[in-house]
Image (cartoon, rainbow, N blue to C red):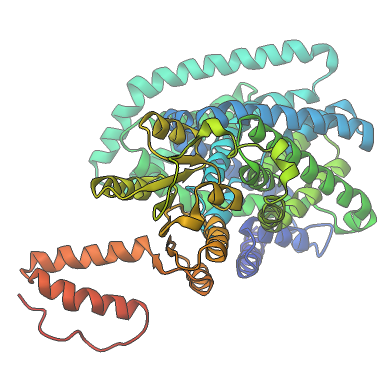
Length: 574
């Protein structure tokens, strides 16, 4: 047993490290490591059943922490596009995938249903990683992606309850499902009572001991106990774990509990994904490579088209449609959890599972490239006039509010916190400006305030032309979107060589690119925050403001740019 786990964790480390170096999700490294050491390849692990049993703890901890992270407030903030759009995306994807699986692949109805809901989910870890690396979490498409992913994560819970029931005989399916839902309702009622009256007192008593060891054991006991309680009554252990996590999320100790449990969850999650990889049959995949590739292409196409259609249905423009569609086109990590549950319940065969597992891995591998292709497609498709018939957002005159004869004005791209503060100052000094904003709700507010504005993407040349950037004196790129900044800078320099361009960004490669394109000034929010720390800290030590501004801050700026390493001139003492 110890040899098995030593091999698993060692190769999981190697696989995860290689994936990280290649810029891929660590989950792919774990799955690959499992395939290498599994019984269908090198066969290094002797007791596969024991590994799968222990790995099931990883599933429980995944759902347990998901329950702790769940918040009604987050769900409300997801808005209509997240809740309604996410629900439509899941159901539409499941339906279309079901029909394709039956008609094209010839699978049974049960397998097709399972396949449909399995591919309807996308990878939160993969998408968030892409958005964070590109600095696009606060962009319109970034917010939509995160909102829909939140709804998808929540959808895991009912799917984990309902889908395994499909393995029951058809004659007793309705009664089995009804009994399962009754048990779920009863368990939720009992857990609500415990969470309201018992759990706060227990956690308070344990926290009073100031022992992190006892606190962690208590959290684990709650999670495992909830999982055991539901599994004892024939309901998914994952549901109990999620419910237990939700109970803890309502207490004052939720943040500490989550911080303590995450390292343990990650370790068992790695073990779980390695165990999934052990189920893969490399020889089977090679023999059925055509089918695997076909299923992968079908998954990517279905998910892209449906996600893009849903976003377009909510009135968003071409860029947001393409990037959200590309971002949701891969299969998610919780899909593997559902697939494992279906395999154990004998809802899907091992052959079908192997095809789905292999195809899902390929879609995750393709995810970064798919997102990049979405950005490239927008750059190529944003100019043609014929697309205006299908994507009129930004050219609708009801969403344009401009004064005639606009000249020597400031074009403010993005009306978030930075853009809003800038326009307030421009109003104070009576400097004319135009706001470009892709959020229709913000545009509606600006119109009611009679603020000159244009609805659309700042990276679209047509939108920039509508804001008369060719007559502007300053282009302020306050939107945290590197692609829009690059496109807007390129176009602005072509039509107005004398315009001053101010961009906001933190990534060095993007900053260098913007400078090459002719940006006058790049503002790095994190660096400016560091200067504020310098000012406040030295101020507490009675350093004069003139000394701070003339010597300390310029020294920090030169250090950050790597221009020099000597000490600042003059004394810094109080």
